[in-house]
Amino acid sequence: DTAVSQTPKYLVTQMGNDKSIKCEQNLGHDTMYWYKQDSKKFLKIMFSYNNKELIINETVPNRFSPKSPDKAHLNLHINSLELGDSAVYFCASSPGQGWMNTEAFFGQGTRLTVV
Amino acid sequence: ELKVEQNPLFLSMQEGKNYTIYCNYSTTSDRLYWYRQDPGKSLESLFVLLSNGAVKQEGRLMASLDTKARLSTLHITAAVHDLSATYFCAVFQGGSEKLVFGKGTKLTVNP
Image (cartoon, rainbow over all chains, first blue to last red):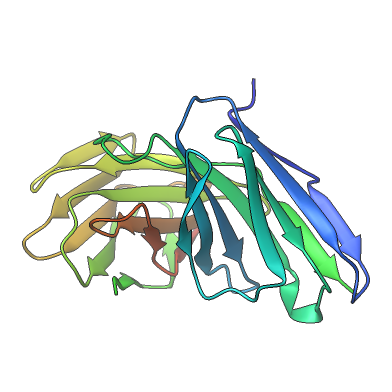
């Protein structure tokens, strides 16, 4: 039973399109994240939600919009896709503030290719 | 702003040898994690280090944390080919839920 699941696993789309990536966790965690991993394997946080509330919003183009309908789901919508958006996007979850062991568990990643 | 530096970024070693990967971070934190990533795969949690002097071992890998020096090490003993992967350290930025990653160390173990 997958703890953090993302869909789709692969996404190939043309420049200018709008696309969404979905993430769900069944761990009962309060906090969810989106990370971007570029071609050099650097992992950078984009957003974090705690109980549906946005708590981290890094310097990310406003074409990226996260949405958390409930604490088990965090989706990422990207408008007007650009070539530079090509990367692997990872969703993650952790128990959240107040928990000492705030280990983050990662989904399998979504490889986005913009052509 | 928390900065996490790993070195080396690339490590090629022979089977049977020992080596250490270093992770330095710039601001106080009491939570440090090591992850492993195989090519095309997700990140797998290896170690959770929560206090100064913490040491954890799993098989041929041993991780330690010195919060005063802001340094963690991942020691590899008698490397085997199966350990080939990219290893990331990650540190929680104090007062936030932000987990900041180092750039990763790509380890290749040659027969």
